[in-house]
Amino acid sequence: MTVLPRRKPYSTGNPELDERIAELVRSSCPEGERAYVQEIATTALKLGLDGASRVDLKIASAALKEMRHAFRIFTPFRQVQKVTVFGSARTAVDHPDHDRAVEFGRRMAEAGWMVITGAGSGIMGAAHIGAGRDQSVGVNIKLPFEQEANEIIRGDGKLMTFRYFFTRKLFLLKESHAIVLFPGGFGTLDEGFEVLTLLQTGKQTPLPVVMVENPETGYFQGLSRFIQERLLASQLISEQDLSLFRVVDTAKEASEEILRFYRVYHSSRYVGPKLLIRLERALDDSELADLNLRFREVLRSGAIERAQSLPEEQGTPLARLAGIELDFNRQDFGRLRQLIDSINAFGSS
Image 1 (tube, rainbow, N blue to C red):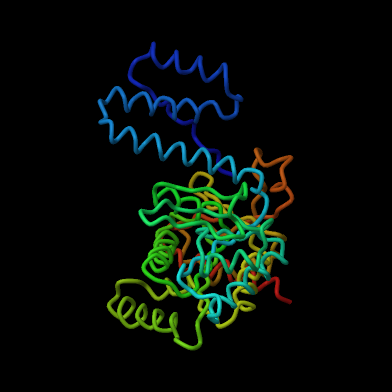
Image 2: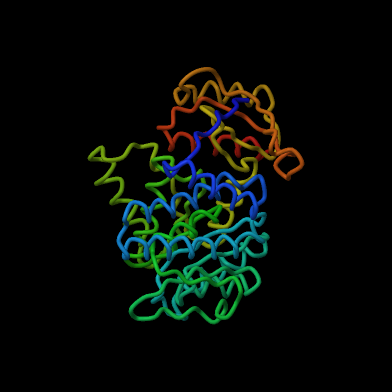
């Protein structure tokens, strides 16, 4: 397994000031986290040294405080899988999409998942109704016309409210293991295309993106046709990018698609130049040979090989997992999704 190089110290440019920050961090933080806490403190001080404006400082301060608060709320639930649901806040309670969102939330909660939404009404409230209060997380946003949290998550300790969309979006994706979209407006499309962009460029670790169709309107079929007839036909995306999302007809299919994604695949991360893919079970020789035959074009060098857990993962739940590693070209992320689908297909028999 590749060993990461030592990180270059981050500095204010003033050795005396650096040491004062380091001493403060040493006296107040656990050893394992000191380097990053020192970098955060150094960055804050450098903003002042740079002469940042009051507006800039207010933005940086508010964003960091929002992030700290959200980290604290999510920490107790880090070992629980979560799905983020996007969709219109305007969907009426008697609309079929509302019923489908309720059913989807219920199915995921029954599977042991938590359901994250933007905490509003409509589709967001419906998904929380299905999941129930204990399995719901709300990530609200302050708006000029105040968006009140839905009655399921209102007043709950797992509700957080953000000033900025960019920090809110960070946690809607960072803490999620799957994304599900129901029909919605500009916000839903913005969130859907943002996660597809992040997946396409490798800025988001692989996860399933599922669009739950409204059979009465063909909402996502129309969107899918636009993607194929305009984006793909104009060579603005590649055909493999179509593998980054699925369109399904029912809440049952949506939940099954998500659970299928994690049948064998568990998670992935880069370790030096190699991509480590953690698996729920080890692949046998024939399965490994099949992957090397069908996906060799995504390798910069070498082959797809078995991998051991990392030293820092010993004594953690990750130590039980099997794994493979590959020198991935960090470009063909649609093919990477297809590789993961192939791994999960090995577990279907």
